[in-house]
Length: 166
Image (cartoon, rainbow, N blue to C red):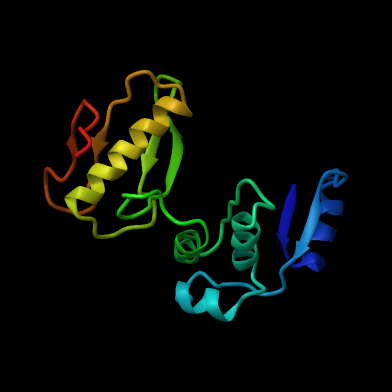
């Protein structure tokens, strides 16, 4: 496992929390992209940030996956320029697995990324989410719903079948 960040911060934390670091390699990344920095500008200017280094390692095949709790916009820009989108995908989305009342799980897409989506983008999100739910979460017949942000009455809409690819 690789941990990317300031080595002088990470090393004492591993000791403090008694984390076995025998399978951990620290990749020193002294720069930080702040949460309110412009993503494209920050990635260009901060090549020694954990996000920039992480995408370089991912794109070069030195890592299989890369996660970050950092700047969402920088993660989006980094993914678009480093690993590219699947051909035909208009806009990427971020998802998270959430618990349901019955104890099973659901997949929530477009979490914290896009404030303004076109209908065809929402349709693609639904298709990608449905395929992910089937192949990764082993949900046989995933139901797709649409939630919209806003204050108007009746803003939440649900549907029960995955959309048809166009």
